Image 1 (spheres, rainbow, N blue to C red):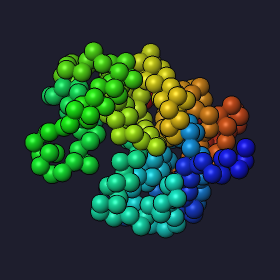
Image 2: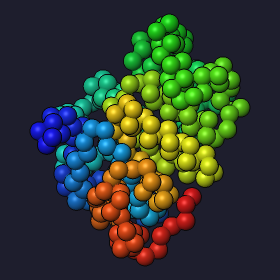
Image 3: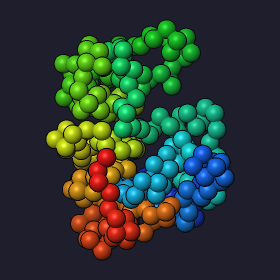
Image 4: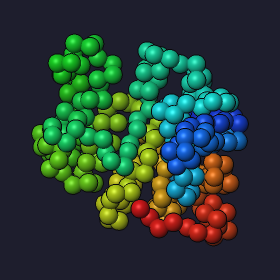
Length: 266
């Protein structure tokens, strides 16, 4: 079993990783957002990242596809040194990683199917991308992704006519159309009501279990993190203070992560 895990892992490794950034809150002085991060995440894991606002959760998520660059250490995904990638090779790498945001990032004034089809744009010749020309196979794949998310009937409805939960499902369908190896989700249920948030988390869990896609989710709702994730990473002030099974997170662990002042869900 250990040998199988070694051969079939998504190795997301970040050794002694540091990220430096400028912030208006600190009067544009540099600050160290992450430090001493060392993670290995296996293929098919469902990992929830929790911690106070400003702890570094979003930064950690966004370094994996290089939305934020690290300044020290290594970042390896599926055997690829991500920090060595540039231009076309970086764009090709990013197509393997789906990204889900709290704000859905949809083009609300166009149809659902057109939103899902944007998943193919990075790989298209410039003229097809400019004119919005997609093949029959691409359109069928987009419709299949919508069907997988249970919203095929909304394919030709404008995105702004959908509820928040439906819009997040469109974002998930767009991600599935990429055939991702990893899905990164940055507070995907923060703006949803409790019932809808649970439905969207059900979708993440189904995608993880049925498609064996690695899911890393940054989430403020601790109860949802413990209910759905198999592994929890707790971050405090840019450092990992807990990394282990979700079912072993107790009040002492939460106090260490949240410094005794656990946040209310956003």
